[in-house]
Image (cartoon, rainbow, N blue to C red; front, side):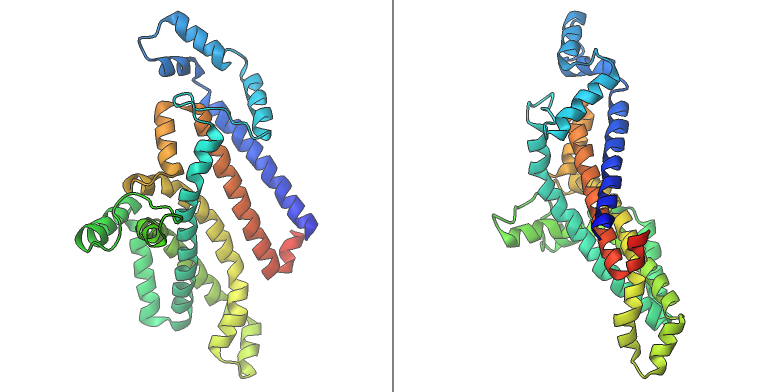
Amino acid sequence: MIRFILRRLLVGLVLVVAVSALAYALLYANSDNIARRILGQNATTELVARKTAELGLDRPLWQQYSDWLVHAVQGQFGRSWFTGELVATGVTSRLSVTLSIVLGATILSAVVGVVLGVLAATRGGWVDRLVQFVSILGFAIPGFLVALGLVLVFSLQLGLFKATGYVPPTSSIAGWLSSVTLPVVALALGTIVVVAQQVRGSVADARERDYVRTLRSRGLSSRRVVARHVLRNAAGPALAVLAVQFVGLLGGAVIVEQIFAIPGLGQLAVSSTVKADIPMVMGLVMATAVLVVLVNLVIDLAQAALNPKVRLS
């Protein structure tokens, strides 16, 4: 198991470095205009050249990246070019906000998706058709329309939840739940249908296996066979899908946080990208890459626990 974890960590490290190099190259491809963006269009050529040298943008790209990487390994990601805020502080202060939404959406997607998928595979009939119909709706309706609809109904008309803003759990648990419920639901709906479809297919396939027929012939109830054996074998593909969807949830959080005015990584990413605040954007890229690697490691460990053959792959 230790070798399995070390292999996954090594692959994750290579992935993070590769993502950072690609992102750095893309962000600095038009570095000639960065100094002018910071100083404004009315800045003189002399001021722009001085600012370019101050930021180190007059050096070769490989040298800029190597210096950045050395400092990043030490936990020094620089400061925002516009606010002077430490990148590490700016990212970490908003990370908990985004994680509370994304992790909540992931858990909700896993629970509801598994329940719907199992019901569709075991009951069949109108239950299966209903799940299929809901899945089609989930794929067809854009997430931002779902978010706006939730705000209109549950916030503006019924007044059950906060329409905008974020309340930290340290201030008020009830206020925090009120502020994150609608964003979590809006973010999770698309993932629920994906997980439900995957679980439905996996459970339906597992129920046709010989070992399931053998267990039933021994007098075990269908519910017990599904709960103890079928779900264990169907969990692997579902976990893999959930890991992929987690990346999508991070991207969807950008839109959801804008709609609900939540001060998370998504809102910071939009404002930093619009202003071309490259150090802050790189910090966000690295935080996202590390999150994805950690989530995939957790999923791999869960799959290895469910299926020992995974440890040998």
